[in-house]
Image 1: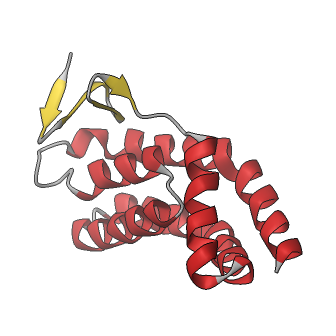
Image 2 (image 1 turned 180 degrees about the horizontal axis):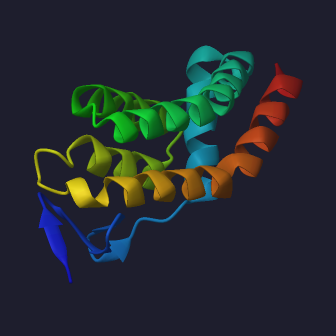
Length: 143
């Protein structure tokens, strides 16, 4: 089954396809995004942001789980929106896309997929966590 929303389609419930190619975690994109950000705010600033993202994201994911359990769609939408924004800062396209899907799941009638979106977010975060930690350490050493 292929779903379409705007200019993005997906075959997997939360795996977006843009321009015919699945959006996957792209380490080179994340590192380039961090390099560009470091030019603007310095390596120490980016390292601090990464460390904050690494500390906050597990808490945010647990918060989303609580909102799902209590069926608090308003708070769920806000938390997913916040996660989407913080993920986009570092070029984490897949995290951003899944969080976007979760954020709009009530409006698009995808309530049954919300738990799956949360699990996909958890898995994606675990998949990119190591590189985020290493990048934060590299940037801190530069600063």
